[in-house]
Picture 1 (cartoon, helix red, strand yellow):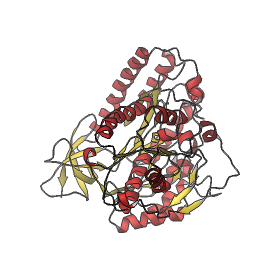
Picture 2 (picture 1 turned 90 degrees about the vertical axis):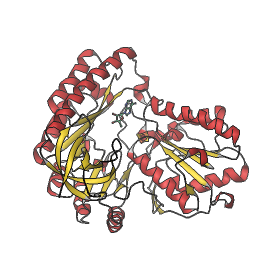
Picture 3 (picture 1 turned 120 degrees about the vertical axis):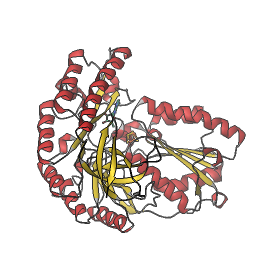
Picture 4 (picture 1 turned 180 degrees about the horizontal axis):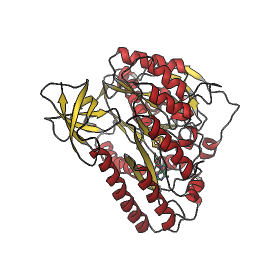
Length: 471
Ligand code: 5AD
Ligand code: SF4
């Protein structure tokens, strides 16, 4: 038993060395071999990739993945803590699981991910959700089998969550969701401590993977037939800072580019760490895709300061314009929070102004959600929720107008698309992504799944394009 502690999670011990170790194979309790497991993942791409590791580890131990939760002998919820609604989804789901456990007491249920790192959540699990069998955190996925085994042996709820800086574990088994695109972590954790954000508390300090480990993973993926890798981190632009004196994301992009994998993407960027050299690397390397997700969060300098974002809207704009100028055909998307504590109508209008100036290709918009333990959650917040909702609607209307416009600009052009499968809405069509990350539904007589093909864009919708495969 090891419980999370938010104060420890906040500490950054600069003298503590990051331990880089290899995954150690531990055998799962033999009663579970051959049993079916179900993993549900919430949240960001990093969490998705953690979910792939959880599945990899379980499959490696002889358990069988099922897509049907009802069939499962072991259920794992890999949770997200970013906003209250992420919490609500998980707690809602746990009600369902409670009923399943009443019918089948042998069913094993585990919780992991970012919510598991929160002290208050674990307190609730221990008092109200006693039927949850085990909990582990973001720092000890590699030790999951021991956590499960301990639960089976003791027959008691087992909680093992570490509120530590964090280490780097290499060679964990992974069961990837796609055969053509793969996530590759390059940096874990975050040291930015934006005042609204829980991530620095749930994912530990900023720690980069060694460049040679990243490059050999990409080389291997290419050999296995993967066409695209997405380099992942809460802030990929900080890559290398903790590990090297003169090796940055720009160098890494150039080196990963030399593997000749068809497509390289990277998310998420923080404007603070985005250098000119990185922009050059993106524009120089043909296989680095022209797409940048660059969260702005607010257009008001007063709010940006309260958010601890470390840039002004003018600085953001300078960077934004440089990327637009230098990277041919680039798409830029962003994240925006409305209703941050004390945001006035004038502050909000400045956000609308910056959207009008930047004309983002797309934006993810959120209402501020106070996260326990973060500085922003302690700020006075007098704006009624109805006003926040109304602001979100106004913002979404504007944002959609520009994503529509950006999509319309693609009509008539020929785009290279990586085709990932059948279209979700219409299975007589295929779906894929352009180099600048636009979703395209594609008409084709031939099976083009897994290929990079030329597609002529015929029509634009708000969130996707329609096109025809050009031989
Ligand atoms: N409330 C609302 N949105 C948040 N985000 C992060 N923390 C919060 C919060 N407490 C948003 C930011 C971030 C994205 C991943 O989620 O816009 O970029
Ligand atoms: Fe959610 Fe952030 Fe954790 Fe990702 S890192 S799962 S977005 S809280």
